[in-house]
Structure formats: C-alpha cells, structure tokens
Amino acid sequence: MAYRVVAAVLVAAWLFPALAEGAVRHYKFSVVMKNMTRLCATKPIVTVNGTFPGPPLYAREDDTVILRVVNHVQYNVTIHWHGVKQLRTGWSDGPAYVTQCPIQPGQSFIYNFTLTGQRGTLLWHAHISWLRATVHGAIVILPKLGVPYPFPKPHKDVIIVLGEWWKSDTEVVINQAMQSGLAPNVSDSHTINGYPGPFPNCTSQGYTLHVEAGKTYKLRIINAAVNDELFFKIAGHNLTVVEVDASYTKPFTTDTIFIGPGQTTTAILTADQPVGKYLIAISPFMDTVVAVDNFTASGFLRYKGTHAFSATALTAMPPQNATPVTNTFTESLRSLNSKQYPAAVPLTVDHSLLFAIGVGINPCATCVNGSRAVADINNVSFVLPTTALLQAHYYNISGIFTDDFPGNPPIPYNYTGNTTTNFQTTNGTKVYRLAFNSTVQVVLQGTALLAPESHPVHLHGYNFFVVGRGVGNYDPLKDPKKFNLVDPSERNTVSVPTGGWTAIRFRADNPGVWFLHCHLEVHTTWGLKMAFLVDNGKEPNQSILPPPSDLPQC
Ligand SMILES: *[C@@H]1O[C@H](CO)[C@@H](O)[C@H](O)[C@H]1NC(C)=O
Ligand SMILES: *[C@@H]1O[C@H](CO)[C@@H](O)[C@H](O)[C@H]1NC(C)=O
Ligand SMILES: *[C@@H]1O[C@H](CO)[C@@H](O)[C@H](O)[C@H]1NC(C)=O
Ligand SMILES: *[C@@H]1O[C@H](CO)[C@@H](O)[C@H](O)[C@H]1NC(C)=O
Ligand SMILES: *[C@@H]1O[C@H](CO)[C@@H](O)[C@H](O)[C@H]1NC(C)=O
Ligand SMILES: *[C@@H]1O[C@H](CO)[C@@H](O)[C@H](O)[C@H]1NC(C)=O
Ligand SMILES: *[C@@H]1O[C@H](CO)[C@@H](O)[C@H](O)[C@H]1NC(C)=O
Ligand SMILES: *[C@@H]1O[C@H](CO)[C@@H](O)[C@H](O)[C@H]1NC(C)=O
Ligand SMILES: *[C@@H]1O[C@H](CO)[C@@H](O)[C@H](O)[C@H]1NC(C)=O
Ligand SMILES: *[C@@H]1O[C@H](CO)[C@@H](O)[C@H](O)[C@H]1NC(C)=O
Ligand SMILES: *[C@@H]1O[C@H](CO)[C@@H](O)[C@H](O)[C@H]1NC(C)=O
Ligand SMILES: *[C@@H]1O[C@H](CO)[C@@H](O)[C@H](O)[C@H]1NC(C)=O
Ligand SMILES: [Cu+2]
Image (cartoon, rainbow, N blue to C red; front, side):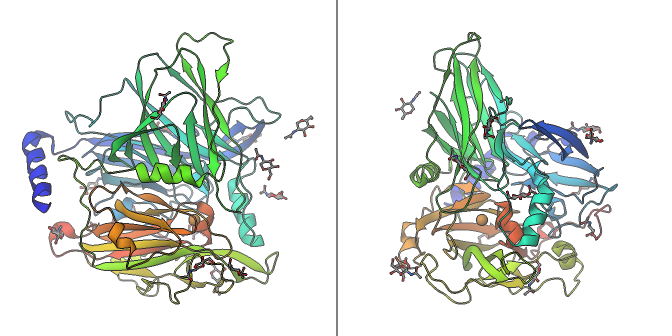
C-alpha cells in the first residue's frame, strides 16, 4: 500500500515536472454594507463587494492565493477558506480568536496560502459571530494545467450556493438568543444562489439554471446555510456525484443530494430530458424535535427552446425527517482511490479519542427560563479566548489556553439513552495536543441529552477519512471490525447521525492550531467546539511559518 502511494507520487512528478510550481492569484475582497431586498423586505447586510452570495475565488491546484480583505463595516471581520488545508499557513485560516484576531473596522489583512493536493469545490465564509450568514462564496480549485478530471469534462461549470435568509438582522438574532438563553429564531427562507423563489404573499425571484439539450453540466453545490442540513433535487433528472469537499469520489448516481452546512458536492447533470422547465428545490433535513426553517426554496432548470408558458415539471422533496435518504447518500460516498488519487487512510492510530457531542443546559440567572442552552464536547463548552490561540502558542503566551482537553468523556454514560442527568457542562479553553505526524482517530458520538440531533462536524487544517458510522453508542470492540480502511470518503465536514456516531481518521502532518466544531452555527456559538494543537516536526519544512507582518492584533 505504502509503496503504491510513493510510486503514484513519483509518476505524477515525472509526468508533470514543469508544472510543480503554481501561479500567484491576487484578489481583493472589500467588506461593505449593502441594502438587499428578499421576501419583499429590505435590510442592510454585510457583504463582500456588495453581492450575496459573494464573489467566487478561482485558482488551480498548486497556485498561491494572495487575498487582501479590507473591512469597511462596523463589525469585526475574519474570513475562513473552508477546507483549504493551509499547510504551515495557519495564520491564513481565519477563525476569529483561534488563528487570528479580527480585522477591525477600517483595517485590512492579506491572506496568503497555497492550494496543495486538493481540487474541486470548497467555500469561503466569515468566521466570526454569525456574519457568515451573508458573507460567503465559492472556492473553485481547477486541476493543474494539463491534468484531466477523472470523469468526462462537462460542457459547463455552474456554481450553486445554498443559503439561509432572515428578515431580521442576523447579529440581532444571535445576540437576542444569547441574552435570553433560548434557541435563536429560525430563518425565514432558504436560498439558491441568493434567491428563495416563490414565498407566501410575495412574488419573489428564483434562480434559473439555463441548459441546452444533450449537454452536461458540472454543478458545484455548496451548503453555506447557517444552521440547516439540506436536501437538493432537480425534477426529472439524476445527478452523478464526482467530488465532495475537493476530493474526488467514485461516481454514483442519485436523484437527491444530502448536504450539510460547510459541505460541498460536485455533481454532473446531463440535460437528457424533453425540452422544458424543471423545478430545482432545497428543503431542510431534521429528524428530531428541534425547530427548523421548513421553507422549501425553489428555482428552475430551463432548457433552451422552452415555450414561455410551458408548465414546470415538479418534484416531491423527501420528508423533513427522511433519515434513510441521508443514510443512503452518505453510505454511497467512497474515495476515488485511484492510482493517481490514492486514499492515504491511516492504518494505525496513535491517539484514539471519543468525543461525546451534544447540547445541554446550564443555569443562568438573567435568562428567560433561569437557564441557557449550551453545547459541548466531552462536557466542555469551549470559550473563545481574547487573544488568538495560534498567537498564544507561537509566542508562548501563558494563561490563554490549557492543553488538557479530555480525549474521552469524563464520566462514561449511555450517550444515546434517555438519561435525565449530566445536562450541565463546564467552561474551558482547552486544546488537545498532538505530536507532528501522529495519527488520530476521533469517534464523534452524538448524545441524546435534551434532544439527539445530527451535527455536521468540521475540522480545520486537514481532510479526514470517514471510516465508520452507526446508530446508538459506538462499540469499541465490534464496530472497528466494520471500518472501511480502503476507500472511505475523504472530507472536511461530516454529518454525525442523530443519536449515532461517526469515526474519522487523519494524520497530524500540518503544524498549527486547528479548530474542530459543529458547523451548525447555533451549536458552535453554544460551545460545540475545540482545537487541536499540532506541534512542529523536526525538519525545517515541518514548522509553522512565521506570522505575517500585518497579522491583526487583539
Ligand atoms: C472587489 O471590489 C474591489 C474594489 O472595491 C475590486 O478591486 C476587486 O477586484 C473586487 N473583487 C472581486 C473578487 O470582484
Ligand atoms: C440603505 O437604505 C437606507 C434607507 O434608504 C439608507 O439610509 C442607507 O444608507 C442604505 N444603506 C446602504 C449601505 O446603502
Ligand atoms: C506569502 O507567503 C510567502 C511565504 O509563504 C512569502 O514569501 C510571500 O512574501 C508572502 N506574500 C505576501 C504578499 O505576503
Ligand atoms: C424572534 O422571534 C420572536 C418570537 O416570534 C420575536 O418576538 C423576536 O422579535 C424575533 N427576533 C428577531 C431578532 O427577529
Ligand atoms: C397572505 O395574505 C393573506 C391575505 O392578506 C393573509 O390572509 C394570509 O395570512 C397571508 N399569509 C401569510 C403566510 O402571510
Ligand atoms: C435515475 O436513476 C434511477 C436509478 O438508477 C433510474 O431508475 C431512473 O430511471 C433515473 N432517472 C432518470 C431521469 O434518468
Ligand atoms: C412550517 O412550520 C410552521 C411553523 O411551525 C407551520 O405552521 C407550517 O405548517 C410548516 N409548514 C410545512 C410545509 O411543514
Ligand atoms: C441506552 O439507552 C437506550 C435507550 O433507552 C437503550 O435502548 C440501550 O439499551 C441503552 N444502552 C445501554 C448500553 O444501556
Ligand atoms: C427511558 O426509556 C425507558 C425504555 O424505553 C423507559 O422505561 C423509561 O421510562 C425512560 N426514562 C425516561 C427518564 O424517560
Ligand atoms: C461560561 O462562559 C460563558 C461565556 O462564554 C459565561 O457567560 C458564563 O458565565 C460562564 N460560566 C461559568 C460557570 O463560568
Ligand atoms: C509520517 O509518518 C509516516 C508513517 O510512519 C511516514 O511514512 C511519513 O514519511 C511521515 N511523514 C513525515 C512528513 O514525516
Ligand atoms: C473587535 O475585536 C477587538 C479585538 O479582539 C475587540 O477588542 C473589540 O471589542 C471587538 N469589537 C467588537 C464590536 O466586538
Ligand atoms: Cu451541532
């Protein structure tokens, strides 16, 4: 296995020697307020360059991106390049108070990173408070020049960004919830490339995808929603999934895409149906009692030559609680694992961790019910520091964090049972320390305290392999026997099933401080987050680079 990996790398280097060095791409993102009308109401929103979704970022594998963010709004801002591995460039990762202090009003910061070993679709988004609701956009990583896709090249590339829209200001929504201790209001609609489609009592625009019969389209589908896992469907058409989270997959065909916040799915659409108009729709997945925005956003797939008044072919969305649809989709995902793109799954494990993840309740004298909703990993509700963790680590500043994050729940219990104890969590700013190049397995175990819920968990700085998943409690004796260590899906965000578990593996070969958190923003806000601190290796090219001179200070 190891020999095959080395051989493939050597062959690639021999075939494409002149292309090892990428180009430099310069970008500027201006963060500005913009009045935007949706659902027949207008409000000012934070944007990049005045657009919603924001501008796409295009680059090739091996390119270096030099991207200057200028903050013209009254909020602190940071931007995260979601899924970009940031090898040794943690300073450019973006989560506020983890890898950097915020870019304050009137300030700017240059993000500087190289796209290594990844190709496909990712997303960028603000990573502070709830600004990512409107500050997000696509990242498209094209293959190196001359390197083909491992599938027939489609006629056209199409970016499809899914989002969520609140009529209220989203900063007010989350601030209100943090004061009351209650769950934040759900959004008023979902959006497809910024548009909700028909809305009750509002003639609202919908997104239209124009196609020509006989042609193929590469849909780069991105879930940039704040709190909702979504189903995506196009009436009358199947989709062939070829890549998720900028990793090629074995192609498989489905009529429904299941996609969590922070995830991306690239799928090929063939315009093989009679000329006409077909509904594109997204609806939420929620298989427990938690409130969710139940609005189905819609748009059209429109063939060239469609008559102006032709009827739209409709489609039935899966029921909101369609767990089997999510299982079928998730279990169909496999790494391509070809000679050129091998799946480097760690076969041994240096750190075997069990993270119990869920929501709880803590007392709060000033809150509406005398208590507040919280979320945690292994009973720790993570509290962000006031200096970035990476700076504290790099400059050896003590008192900012401790490196005693628990690798297991402090008191084992029936995680998916109906226990009524253990609701309370502790506060902490704790990291889990890893030696350079050690291998890690994390079993993400959903808990059923309050309500069990599906959590799309995101790791910064790495892709991981999803080696196993199941319902109920993880069984450390039986379940590893069923792990897929050959071609498991490789990604940066995985949906842990409601009342179940997911096992991931990665090799800690990127030094720095790397955030791990639920990508439902409400749970992140409540504390379902932690960080890995990965020490430098011994070789000079195994150390984090020095911080950029314009790194914002707290
Ligand atoms: C954003 O706007 C600035 C001008 O304010 C412009 O220089 C820059 O090229 C724009 N960026 C993109 C990605 O369109
Ligand atoms: C939004 O519209 C309001 C009311 O017309 C106006 O006062 C405000 O300046 C506008 N904001 C922006 C960013 O254009
Ligand atoms: C980007 O980072 C590289 C080192 O990784 C450095 O050589 C280069 O000067 C940086 N560019 C800018 C514009 O900061
Ligand atoms: C949230 O919903 C409650 C109840 O409907 C409402 O009173 C409140 O104004 C809403 N908050 C925001 C920020 O929209
Ligand atoms: C739509 O408008 C009608 C008539 O004004 C009203 O009765 C109905 O409650 C409205 N529906 C919604 C969802 O606002
Ligand atoms: C979609 O795929 C399913 C299962 O392979 C097949 O039964 C169906 O006919 C396909 N539909 C279209 C429109 O190609
Ligand atoms: C969506 O939720 C609202 C409020 O809970 C409810 O009144 C409405 O019937 C729901 N709509 C659908 C389509 O389920
Ligand atoms: C955990 O609780 C569930 C639900 O009550 C129950 O079905 C299961 O048997 C329990 N597991 C253990 C190990 O006690
Ligand atoms: C937990 O579930 C068991 C079996 O379903 C039931 O007998 C018991 O009453 C439940 N306990 C609580 C606290 O709901
Ligand atoms: C935990 O941290 C939160 C801030 O994130 C704070 O409001 C709360 O008082 C803290 N609780 C305790 C027990 O320290
Ligand atoms: C990491 O460890 C693996 C397995 O021991 C080894 O093959 C690899 O060369 C190491 N990588 C680095 C960068 O040290
Ligand atoms: C912006 O960030 C700075 C540095 O962390 C902090 O002192 C300030 O309070 C923040 N401002 C707001 C409005 O949160
Ligand atoms: Cu969550």
